[in-house]
Image 1 (cartoon, rainbow, N blue to C red):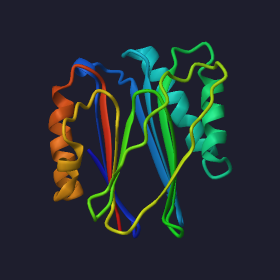
Image 2: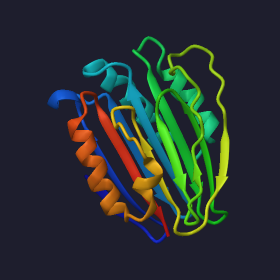
Image 3: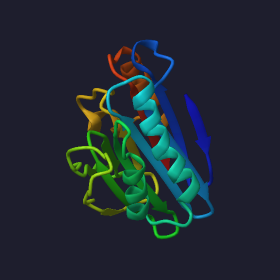
Image 4: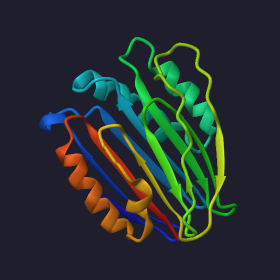
Length: 198
């Protein structure tokens, strides 16, 4: 697992490839610059090398363009990059720490949850399908948050039953340990990122 702590956030990420495969079809990328944070989770269709190539192409675009492009702009670039590749489910968000705002979009079977200290769980419904280079519309979502909120994003290889209960009283470290146990047992590529907003 990879752990990062800044003034604004604590983040833990974990990923496991299907059956110990040397190529994982899930790729995540995150970066922070001052008051902005970006996070991508891409799940290449299927598993193995071609799934890895698709999800990796998505991450390369975000790494290159996240400071200049909007969330929607990056999704368009990622979609174009999927042309003649296998394709990928992609979730992408930016956090503005000054305004305490998320801008989020997702196409495909990736789950995102924002858990507030008062127990409110925000769970945007994903747009079905995947990015493949065909014209695609994105549902842009905006959320505000309070300090002490937590977010979780995971690929469909992480099979959770009661997310609200998982996030209620536990620290990011405790949640990550539990998610890692679930991910190891998965018969799919499995990736999660759990963040605690300070």
